[in-house]
Image 1 (cartoon, rainbow, N blue to C red):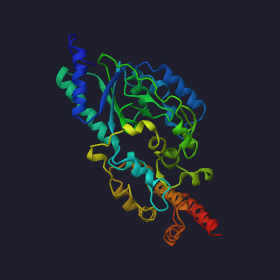
Image 2: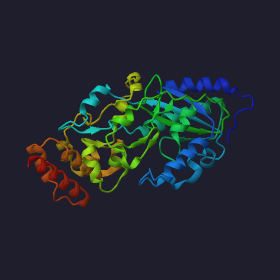
Image 3: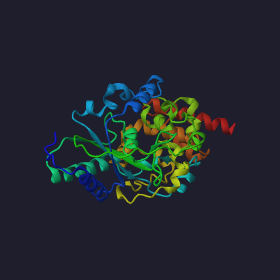
Image 4: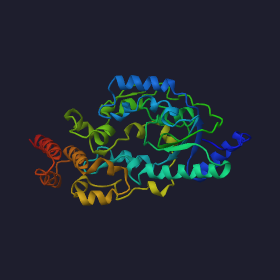
Length: 358
């Protein structure tokens, strides 16, 4: 619990907090209370609809996800921060979509794992607060615990949740990461941002798998990010052609969102593309052995899916690729792979090329 003086000027402290956050590389800091009743109702409806698929962790912690004080006793405020991550002009990313040879990797995963970057900066922010007021109660979260980060950020004035269920800022689009500091400090809260999506339905229309089943409702089981990252088994065949060359995640709803014309490129070196993952042939990535995969995804969010899923995803991408001798040879090399999961998707990919050639 906080040992700060009862005479602490909370308004002045919040102003300094915003300055410190900017110095640490965050584009914005906001403060929310812990009343998330509306978000809790929406979460429960989403879970009842089974839209979470195999993400059992979404229901595992009960009300702790929507009631911060249950997760961290004593919490009365949440400091929410955002950090831009778009490493290059979005038009370059658009040009890669459904490319006949190149792999598409979600822009957030091109550089260093954002969990590590934001967690370290939030810990530094907490240390500055301690230097200013003494010990206080807090915990840092970066997509690593049962936290409703987007509803919290919306309440903190960092943007509004768009029809694609991502957070949008009117001056910065949606290409940013979120992080939270749960705290017992009674800081003044910010005003929530209102929605500015209006009648626009671009994100709904461009989604390759029709995963946005209604405005503000995402069926994760259809989402390419879920299918290539969260799903551990076979990708349902009805989605494989629709995935195209998206071998890790999907950005379509952000790439075509009109609000992202205001997005700024990041100046964080940690988010710069590594291992040429922003411009790699699928056949080259498919030929990585497990040792190479582990070495080249060290410090990357991609590491979490493991080598088997990596090959599964690229096999699907190669099934949708141009029928060249190089593609066919690369696929045939994996026909005897130890993993039945990999073999299944390789066989599917080869059937796609055989059908096209016939």
